[in-house]
Amino acid sequence: MSEIIHEATGKMTQLCRKIVHVNIKWSIFERVSIFRRFFRFIWDRILVCSIGRPVHYRRLTRRDSPPVEGVLIDNEALPEDPRTMCNGYETDSDLVSLKISLLGDCQIGKTSFLIKYAGDEQERCLEMAGLNLVNKTSFVQGARIAFSIWDVGGDSSSLDHLPIACKDAVAILFMFDLTSRCTLNSVVGWYTQARKWNQTAIPILIGTKFDDFVRLPPDLQWTIVTQARAYARAMKATLFFSSATHNINVNKIFKFIMAKLFNLPWTVERNLTIGEPIIDF
Image (cartoon, rainbow, N blue to C red):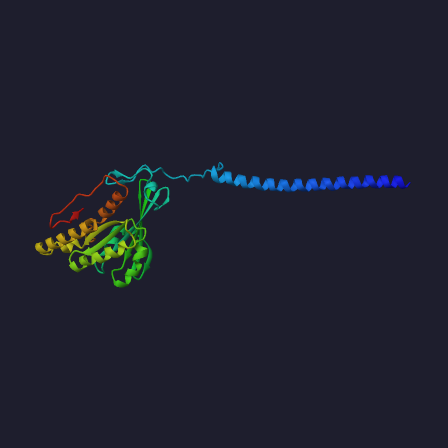
């Protein structure tokens, strides 16, 4: 009987050893599997970083809008896709948004100039001490050209608005009163301050109140024209004489800006005749 019990005990012991052995093997296998999955995951990440995996994009539904075949400026056309030419100034497939700054002393006609251009379609978005923001959108052959015009006051306290007014502007209009040489001399300071915040904007020098300027003695007119042309050359700017009262060269200046931005063949005609609205470049 004792032999039977001893034999049964031995078999049970062997069975337990086998079970323990199997459990150990299974435990080792599970750990190896965990490490294998971990290393496979790491390897997959390395492959993704090195060669990349195919990415599937969802096609966006294009909004229905009339095709833009070109925007005419004095019978010259903008590129077929204006958005691709605006260096970050687009907000829609048929909208080109352009920021422009107006700088100069007080009482030189900046506001009159702005109102003459914007007209009844102007949208006054911001009006605060020393700074006005006016938007005007033109619809031309299915395309929308939106000008955001920042008019900075001419007093010394308005200098605080220069950073926000000049930043990201595509053109800066430096304006002076043609009947006041001190406002022309001030252009140097405005130009220096503006270039601290924007070195890429197109500079344009504009003499206002041309209708009053032509009443000055011819020798004084010649002196002012000579000085203005010298300043324009130093600034590498195009010079325009304008009059908001008679709408002289107001719209032409904005057409000139668009032509410059989009590299259009349309250009203004140079005019250096004393007594006529000067255009020099």
